[in-house]
Length: 125
Figure (spheres, rainbow, N blue to C red):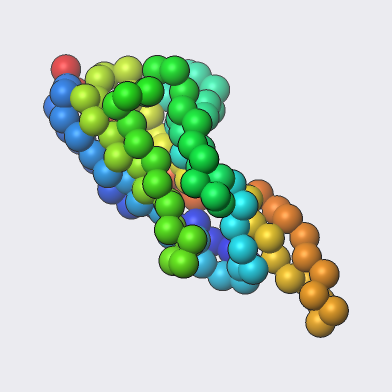
């Protein structure tokens, strides 16, 4: 079993900053892509930022230049540094990981997607 646990959400004023962290644990051989998604009330879940195992990143247009994603492959963690926050950034933020797991003694692996339970970020105006 693989578990993703997020932390760092909370209430912040417009223009403020927050740092989200996510830690993956459990039966993990390695992790490919990691990402942060968010879902605002009444809206669909959207990609905020992603990072490959090699460190390549991509961002939603709405957060470019304000948010920065990073990861630590040794500790299976991913972080999201959020700056210049706006009320439009208010949402539940979810951690995502594409995990490769060893499934038998021969070393066969499978790749599965996992999600955290989410952490609420509220930006007041």
